[in-house]
Image 1: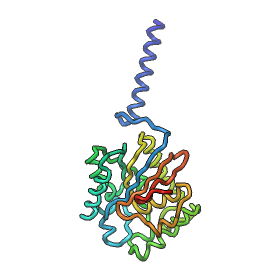
Image 2: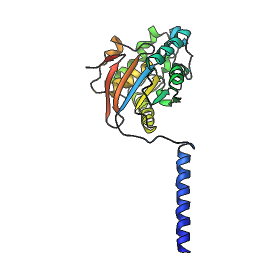
Image 3: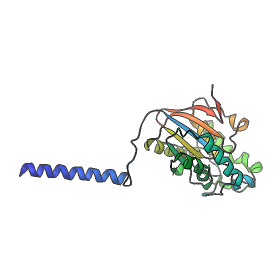
Length: 238
């Protein structure tokens, strides 16, 4: 009788453990997290209706791609045609998800939406012409790069909040098991996070070499040990 009870107890424990795994994974298999080096390829979305309008638009879900933007998205899929990546991620904004779609379709990898990858919220500068409000919009993010994360965009977020939400999404990407992730995000978010996160950042890139639509940045490293810039818009770092 004692042996039967012991075996029954072990069986119940195994069932409970299995159920816990299913609940945590939504009932499906989940890749084991890793702690090795990651390569992240950030790609800015194609031209959106917001870009074409010349107005600052950081709303969610925001405007869709223009015909030109769709053509740019198709070109990205050609560039990534070797499919040498293990995950496709996009922000909560329509324009990044649409830019990711041709790559997703070509490589048969689903697009995973990560909530922290969206554009830096413009606050009181939302809807202003880019040539007028752009400088003020980026005044606080420029301070973030210099180490003042307390600086806040009026009506929006500070550097601590921005860095945390981006880092949380990248940590989630690592937890999903991705070692070579392709991440479709936004110009401001990609450039500012990169310059806040990599060793020896060059803030001059914001003015001298800003990311255009479908421009890309590659970094390597880990959330635990930090990041190193590999290339900026196709140009390898020294």
